[in-house]
Length: 131
Image (cartoon, rainbow, N blue to C red; front, side, top):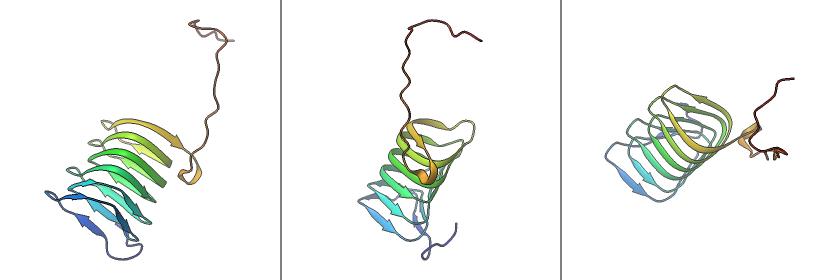
């Protein structure tokens, strides 16, 4: 883990925290967090880690579980053991086979939400035709 604004922070296994966390440095969660994380660094959720809340960060590596709103400005990497539920906004996404990704995902430059064009079909339940 890179040190953006100081020493990396850790929430160890068997530790439970309720509340919001703001940091300039990287953050690794191997325990359980109910609350929000805001950092200008990287967030890592270890295999036994769990976050229920909102996470805002530059990069994220997830091996454990996440439920809530995830805003990643650059790269979100989901390992094979990851389980994600909620909403995700990201610039780049890497998903290993085996990961569970049950989220509404928005991808765009800098992780900024990009409005998707609405597609309207004039015909219902007709097979696609090749031209």
